[in-house]
Image (cartoon, rainbow over all chains, first blue to last red; front, side):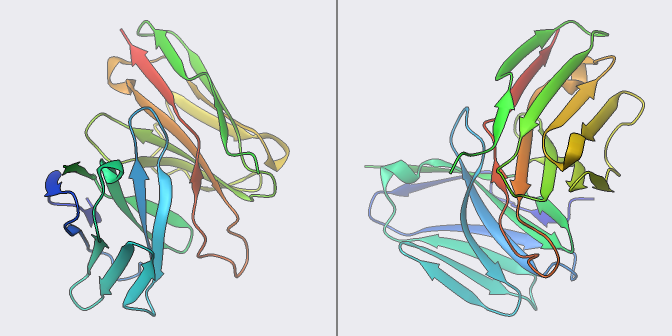
Length: 110
Length: 117
């Protein structure tokens, strides 16, 4: 039972443009959502989070949007840079659990 | 601030052998997680500790996997005997989740890449 889904395994975006990564969840008990970024041979690093009481959180070039009614969140990266090329995981939390999606590989090309 | 430390970085063993991984979380972090990440998949939670007590081990294959967290600090994850399908990256993470401070992010170590041949 995949409670957190990232349906796009990969995304390719030109440098300077917007990258939009999507994530869907099924468990309405999730109340905290996070995005992690992972480079090869490294552990995931925290990027940005959002509480279920908000619908938007912004940090520099990164913005996360939450649509609770649709059980959907998205990560916007503007402008995209080549250094953003990595695998992005969304994660959701209910009480103590932290459940991850399958990841989306973002490639930013010049 | 020192991050989450894991060792070894890489391990190759034959099937049916035993292996152990070690994790030292960030100082003061009460919650410690072990995740298994198979190639092409997202991290899957194996076990979660709050201090030295187990919060969730529902996805830990207990016939072959075991984990402990001594004195609520360091943790070890053991596989005995290993199977080919255990080949994965094993990630340790910690967070400051305690009491009302539930919504804090988890910090990950670099992981241990296990190859079972």
